[in-house]
Image (cartoon, rainbow, N blue to C red):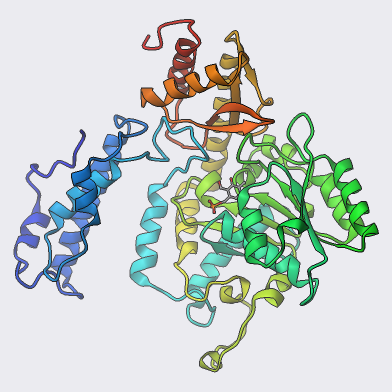
Length: 486
Ligand SMILES: Cc1ncc(COP(=O)(O)O)c(C=O)c1O
């Protein structure tokens, strides 16, 4: 097992920490020397961790009972030393999988950019309140610069706004609540239309928002797993005849299963004709808009009333940063603003109060994380990386296509390749097991039209063409073509 190397002689930091009285531990407000000692020891730990990532397996065996027991142990009254705690944290990370590992091709990978993690450190230490602009106009402006960059990226008008939230699920929830509130207090006749490939967070959002499952209409998809606009139109007409009202249309800009992109322009057209709110779930696919190929494929997204994005997916940031962008900021404010006597001193100004744009009042400073990464790397670097992900996907699909007996759910529309053994689920299951057992790559599966599929998803900046080659070699081995270890 790869472990944090605590035998290494540690610099000044370790010596400084040794001066802390072990009986009383570190005070809640440590002085500068101890702060720096703690900081450098933690930075040294994460640095070693990152250095080892390339050699680390794509997934780990289940943790043994002793480790789980040690991790479950509650904190005691007495202070502990940092070094053994870091060692325990290290062991905790050597379980399950690392979603930014070069071989992580499961679900939707997440890059965990270091620069954004430094932004999180700054955000936590400065601990500015960004729920209301009055509390930190500076940090609000900084976050707003990120939001405006995003709304501009999608071609939304100057009335647009947005809010950074914990991820796509909460962004989708805010969109559903906003669309629902347009129907007034009595919305039992309101219907949400979306495709069979939509992420479950939309269903969850509807349930939380008090919308019955019978009011969520799942529209059929075409051969390429994209929502069928003719079927949508038909369903809406039928519902209108029954006296139901259109609440919203949810289109996907990259489904989780296969990366399918619904016909956004056609959906926008139908939404305009019927008066439905037009939401696009671009949690996975959104930032491909930075690339030329992405812009072509996401055509029509600029007509959305709201767009869910996830910086912790297609901007490679660490978990905890998604966003909801809105064509008209006032719609979301109407649905979410609140008041309390304890807030009567809050003034209004040109900058938004993010607490009026979702369920959160107090929130982590997500803006500084996105801002620091975009500023330090420059936007162009993200475009190049997303283009590289698209290229890796094309290459993987071409190699897989050359393997006899492999078939696809669809030609990849973004960076997911969903494939199976044409002979059926048994061999596809073997394929999946062999890939997972290799621990060189980690993949996930899905079911489409009752058939099992293996998915390769490319969205970690650490994934290289060598990993694609290894994955292909393992697939060939599992299909009985070559020795997978060569
Ligand atoms: C298309 C889509 N929408 C929404 C979500 C939910 O996002 P989160 O996990 O950030 O809440 C996901 C997550 O994978 C997704 O792929």
